Image (cartoon, rainbow, N blue to C red; front, top):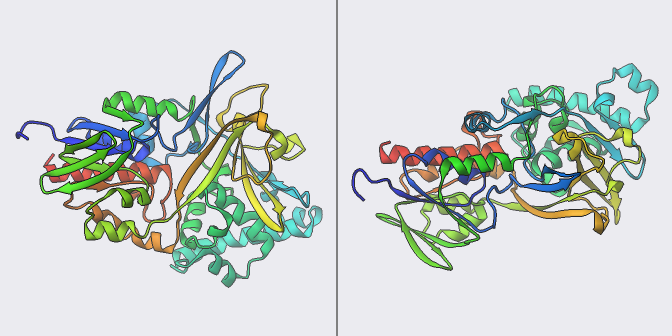
Length: 431
């Protein structure tokens, strides 16, 4: 390669991390973007449906963001000219077995009204939620929260009603993790999220939540136009091998040599791709776990409370199935995206209830990193994995440097890691 020629860079994975890296490198390298699926975007996955002679873009994974907690992504949207609209917060909890319901309005009630009007189960949840947010903030600042969430709640003497009627419901929505893994999460990560937002989490009303107008596919399309890569859709990468003067990407079509490669895949996928990982790459990727979630876009209201007046943007349900309490999330997309329609649209996450087959628009499978103490501890050194290598790694298993180690697993974390991988490559290229 001559001194003036642009380096050839392969980006493996066209989710938000890969798009971020490619966008940062677009003026400094010839970009080839590999994606095994037939579309670009990863968790920016909008299903466009025909509705009364128009097209509605409905998101199924990444839905909302806010500027304080998504600073790099927000700046990116600004540069691309992505249209957004304000998302009014609001949540509703409902127990399909007991009939108990409560939401944004009830959690904000004064104590005397709660004691006078509500059953014992809600009084317990209300009072322990208040205590959790007050004590959690103090414990976080005193560095007493570096332990699994389940252990933290045990030490605090929190009830089963609070755990299963509040904590588990909010956490499954934020991190898309199954109930059994929530107790492994670092208490500090959970508490930090609520400190950065409010007691309602994703359904909180004291945060300026935004959603992309027309769905997140709109930002993906603008990003692709800006990057203008050589796009290799539907081409699964089988392996990536580093050499002293470059790296080879192998697909079913054959092997191709590049000057550098950015692997913007899930950590377990990256682990399988690298044929000769460095000791640090091997050690880092060995510690990444993932879990799968099923999201269904549909029109069946049976997953919602019978009382339509209780429907909110974020609906957290629970029901006993086979003797086991099963929480799930039901996003009411009409309100989340702010569109009017005679048809109601829902996205349910890991819903244990049967949904009428004729109501299903799309069933989608997503994977998310398991956020435990091991992954959080790894954040202290994780960015060193990209120093001095021809192959850079990025994905939501990295944290956002601007927001410290507890911003893991989000769209912002993934975007920021792609940006950092590109910045590291540019520093090594002297650009």
